[in-house]
Image (cartoon, one colour):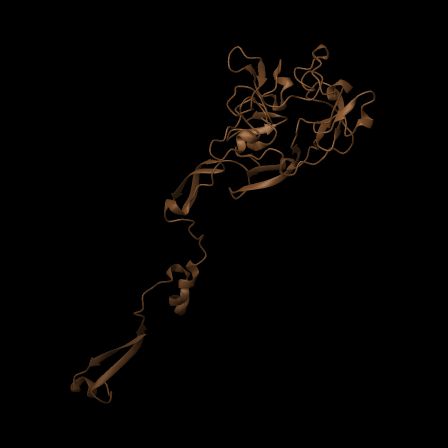
Length: 304
């Protein structure tokens, strides 16, 4: 704040004429402010210079560059900075399911109000094995739970049986096979002639005590069909002209053998680190890893 005084020099003759003492006369004193006016119209009266605090109530800027408006994949896409405000070309409303889901975890991944992906509980999204010996449930494929009770099932050899543990088998010992005997390794009831040490061709055996109604034959033994062989590998004449014999199951023998879930894919074939063979669309499966990337195993089939 500066002070300015107005001084008037008066001639001596005039001074004496008006009876005013001394040689100069001082009039009113004025004050003026040289500080910058930062307060705008918010100031009042003599304190107007303090009005600058009136400009602090505005909305802060969300962004200065487009980098400050990142996309949230599948929820907010095409971010841009428009005069300090983040905007997106595509904004999915809260509750919109995203494309990437995990089948059977009882959850749904969806967009929330902030544009982020969140998970909500969905009871209907349980894992369906498509197998009566396995209990359906959330994340069931991580640790297959045993069915709650003795469920009915059909064995690989077409016999009505019950789930024992996680397996569909007829027996665990001979007591469960009246008039027959139990091949405990596969849980199958077989006729008594299947252990007499000879090949009973009349009874359907394709080799000694194996094939037909008996236990499957080992690799190299004679067979008529693949079901006569352990692991259901190929049953072919090799070399040509020889009797058909059971071949070693492989992941490239063009048949569904061993623990494969479909022809030459799934099971141990999918677990092969060097050359994994997973199953394609609509092929059989047991767990998610049996299927190609992007497919889920739903009710025993690889589906999107």
